[in-house]
Image (cartoon, rainbow, N blue to C red; front, side):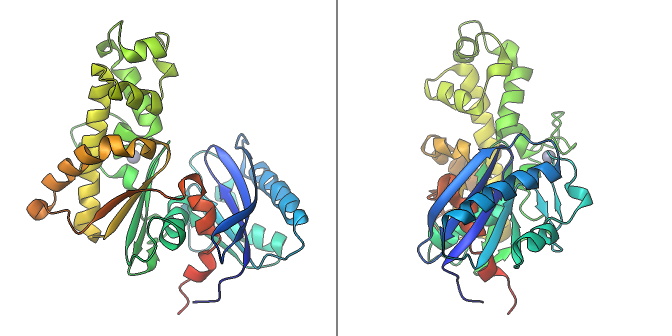
Length: 321
Ligand SMILES: [Zn+2]
């Protein structure tokens, strides 16, 4: 492992937001930060907007940064090329080469869930743990895996928790093209999609009908969980299914990796205290012996900053030993 630099430049290419920060890596603190909505239509303008923000941040500080780390919302290959589900053009370029040329220094890139698990493990909920799995419950679903103090990314696509099949008889089609994926049931798009698909079950006086003014296109995961907390039957039906499928997927993680800690982040994790007990009940039913006592379940400590903070220390996880 190398030395931890004092200041790092962190770039976060998120699905809805581009964020950029100078991080004091000794303290795990963001020193300067800026962001913008990610509305760009292609890779080159996406990168250009990020670099404009980075240049501005770097101009604020006299101290040089000694490391550049990147969190990318998509698949990251070991050669530094990336794949985005949302923005075309990344398949024709090598993001790391472009950034290394710009910054004239090594650039470390990780998938957003891998950056987030590193952030939580090093600075947040997973401090002092040997293992840590970070589960992102957001517009999409993914996870980052640290086992025995090392980040596991496979060939770049490990941790695609959202595309684990949790219902092989389902006819609900996922963004990946397959059917019955976890994302169909508990992601931001999945919950909204199911509200729309089963709208005739909602009823005229239901919580969602009122909140959405009769139009299911206005529904959101946040709204559906809020309705469930008020005991609205349709919202309860949607969230009960979502939590049951999540519990099943988490049992697969435990059966595969037997981690000592699972951290939940992303917008839907805001409802952690609402769903965790029922989720654990389902998880226990699918773990041999039903014993979950060796695995802790925690809410993210770093919240939205986990990818930026994790990206700032990717250089020390560059397993060159
Ligand atoms: Zn899928």
